[in-house]
Length: 251
Image (cartoon, rainbow, N blue to C red; front, side):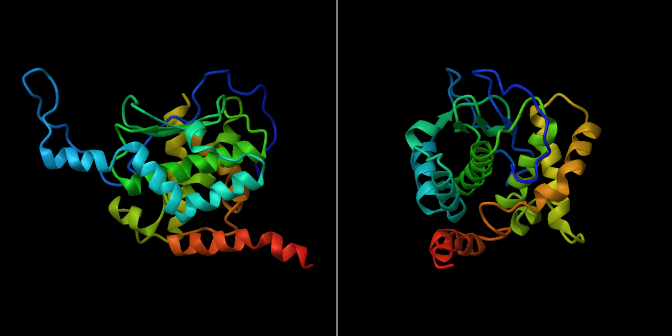
């Protein structure tokens, strides 16, 4: 990962899930569970069942892969780096414990999407983008996810900054806005929260790791070339990425 400090050790053990993180304040709060029927199963009305089918994990994933400009750029960048993504092989919709939204498993190069916690298409897009940034970092560098917390911090900083996690709209929903250099503050905070969700360390240790690598990792905008604050910026970044080879071939 560009700008990531060195160091490390052996990679994650086979089968060990990577970056199974809580959705700490991202988007709207989790809905209350529906009332239970006599046999302990949730009641679901006809209209509710229609919305559930339409918003199922595989359908939301498919639409995200086909239409979201952040995701489309990342898929192209993965392919360009020799790590082409096969949706049927590299994504898995599963039920997850707690409030986890998704994770990247480095041992299988697979992104897990928590179908019981991903609430809507916008939420799906943020989760897929966030985890694809981790996958991109894993593709382009030898990242020691479990033995070097600074490597983890670097990827979490990049994911928070480049995925839209810290967009103005999301921050307004969290009632966080109006601060000077607010994007940087949001990125720091969310990187720390993500580290604490997957590592058994103190907040002080997580904050220290983020502070040590923040400057270099925050300024590493690959593969976007800029911070894509909106979908429009992401579309411009995707256009520029696709034109890179054409530009360099003319030099």
